[in-house]
Image (cartoon, one colour):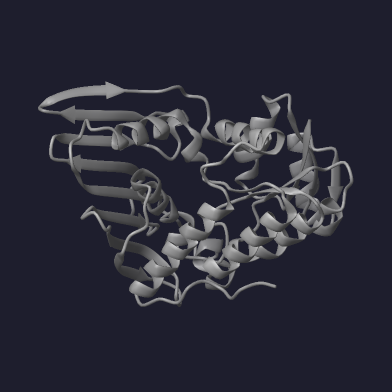
Length: 328
């Protein structure tokens, strides 16, 4: 049994951790901490969490907790992940993993030094839908692949939304656009040699939308688009084009809500679906397997460093500063 402590009362926590643990006999969320005591009490009561603490340090220090879930604002990921690792806890850290690549590298090294599991919570990567898309990409079915187009758009309303604040790691690329960047990286299995980008800026230094064009050493060209403007239409799609055909993956982000892989090869079209088990459940499986069996993870801390390095490159190419400063 792996007992989790969770930091804060983030909206993502139930779907990302609590509900998957309810269907997993090897994991349980038993403690939480939040700055707002009343909010913590309501959250704990709603989700049957037995212990509430006022300070994150108190949860991290618990002897009967083996893992910490870190869904805090991105600007706090590095600090509290390091503290959890130093306390001997495995960490499941929400995306974006850190404010920038320097922070990610510090977190990665601390995990290596401690021998503990540190996972970047890109849950989609563990679902059979993306695994199947990766199999198709790596096969010869599409012939020579020339392009990937990855799009994720979610309208965000309200100037007070945390994603609108640079100081907390805000910006569409940190919260929404990081997914198409990750999709491209994990499909191609490579890092681009060149990056061009442009952004629409709202609050100071906060990208409301960002478009990037990435060129790889084998000639592959990838375009990514993330958009959180109020006018954005909810879209999550990957399109891969080769000289023999095309693959379109609809809703790789949350396939449990419906998805489709459309594959056209030599003029013949076929359709594939996988199961509707939540991607977060597959992520929990992988996290537990890494702890118990030292199993490799698709989104380990080494991969997180590469992910954040590419996000930094996109920001710099768009004329924007990278988020934050290295934590200590």
